[in-house]
Length: 258
Image (cartoon, rainbow, N blue to C red; front, side):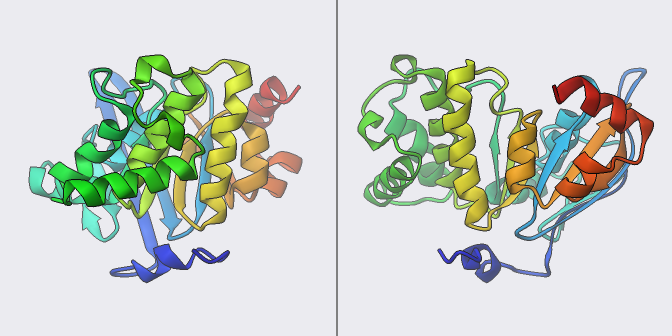
């Protein structure tokens, strides 16, 4: 892949908009989790979403791949509008990779089997081809020697890198990360962030929910701050960290930037 990330551009199907949320609302019972969210992410853009606990960050990205269904507004991913139509949800999920906070690998499958499962069953890829692809991505995240091990034999950081490799094996157009380092010990955080930095440099479209502000400064094209289910502020990293406009943003940054 070129330094300009040519591969995702080649795969463009409709236009340069990767993800668009328009007036999105989501309730859990009485709780208004998303309150009129508008967000447009262009292909190749890297957006880091931050905000206090319960602000709607994880709910928003779960709505982007149909893990949660919004109740009002529109979510369009790679030109496909997400509705409760299961065929459409599957269509979107084939193009969107997701890495969760919890290390949700299959414990009874080896690392290699975890990575080949979806390409074989969803993309109908021949096993040998899927295994070659999986080894390529395991090498990419610097753990090819762990292919025959089971997740329980790996450190948390290694497991999270397996999760990233597994998502990449589906050749996604968009990668979503939901606080991928928050469950890790501090010494393991860097190895996962380094892997994500490399992905970013390849031009992968990424939406990352994270409190890792160093990562945001290094790789984000834009930092989005959420609170009470709304996008309060959105700006380029330099502007966001140096000149936040809203009091809520200033308060949040004062609490996490020591």
